[in-house]
Every structure is written in C-alpha cells, then in structure tokens.
Image (cartoon, rainbow, N blue to C red; front, side, top):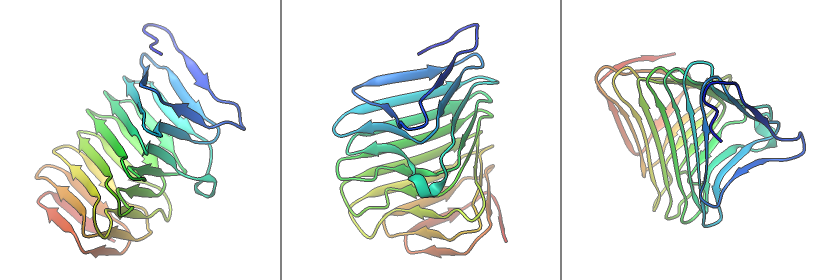
Length: 212
C-alpha cells in the first residue's frame, strides 16, 4: 500500500491483529498511517512480510499494551520493519524479533526516524533464529520499565547496532545480553542505559553512553 501525495490511514478492527505475510509489502509514505488496535505480526509461519514507513508525518502505531502480547518481526518466518526520513512509530506493547526456529526479524530506524516501544526480545529463544536491530541516524526509545533481552544461551544470532547519529534509550527494566547477543555502540552513536545491565555476550561501547 503506497500513498504518494495524499494521506492514507489503514487500521484494523479492535478484535483483529494486523498480519503482513505471504511476501506482502506495505509502504507508508507522504503522511500515511498504519495502525493496529492489537499488534502487528510481520512475517509468520514460513513466509515473509515487509513494512516500510518513510517521510515526515508517516507513522506506524499500535494500541495494545504489553500484557496483550508483543508485536512480532519473524515468527517462524521473515519479517522486517524500516522507519526512515523522520517517520515515527509508537508500539507500546514491544517487539519480538526472530522468536521461533527458522525466524528472521529485522528492525531498522534510519535518517531521523524514531520509534518508541516497550519490551524488546531480540533472538531471545535458543533456536536457529536471527534478530537484528540497526539504528543509523534514527532513535529507538523504550518506555517505562521495559526490558531488553538480546540473544539466547545458544543457537540464535542477535545484534543491536547503534551507528553514527543513532540513539538508543532503554527502559528502567533490566537489559540482558545473553551469550549469542551483541550490542555495539559505534563512535558517533549514543546509548542511554536506564536500568541494570547483565552481559554474558558482546558489549562494545565506542560512542557516548550514560548509566542511570
């Protein structure tokens, strides 16, 4: 769904999840809005789904809180979400990336875009799965007491990279980097850690970082 030149608002009913699957792509542009009253499932059960949100005024939002379940990028499938060029997102119920065997989930926040979310679980199940978060000039903020779990005890691949001009701010909940997790803060990037951190994986902090 592409909306050049006029605003498009696409919303699911309050009782339905928003499923993007079977090779589908949704492109939100020119001030369009993509909204789910529950949560998004992008790339499920052996299939792929892609969402791109680009440009000032364009947004992706969900209404459900964390106790309703997290949004998913890759549930036994391949799912990707990219925000770019000052687009915004609000997904308070959090995100799971690569949360089952054979899954691949990718989140990219680029070029002035921003996303506020809740808990983040990135490749956090010990299975052949992949979760990737890339912040290049974008901002990712976890709200409230949200937690971050990056990687698992084995098998999965999980990374969170804060590249130059990227900013990542955790919630006040615990950040856990498991043995398969890799959090890299490159020079020119910024990370703000607001809760306790436990590291059993890879933690590289070359950029500006603060601790609560």
